Length: 102
Image (tube, rainbow, N blue to C red):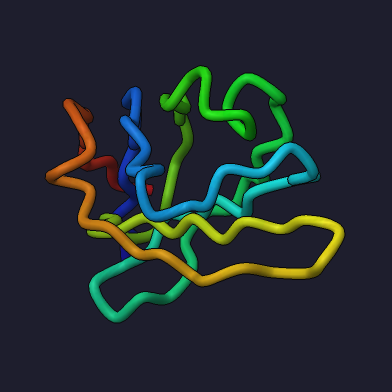
């Protein structure tokens, strides 16, 4: 049997309005999720430009086992983790999906 894979490439515009402004974030967990909110991809954000909300985009270029429908932002500071925020990818800017057979 051949297995489907998805090549996901896109610049995702992060929804950061709900993340409180802080200067002590050490990372934001960033994940691509399937429609059941299972993690397909994770790449923690530690770029100060993003953590300080001076830039609100991340580029993703990866091969996934399923098509993502949402992304997760989960900020972390010296006080621990904040609220887990989940957004639909269709609202995050243009992305390209290419179906591949393995």
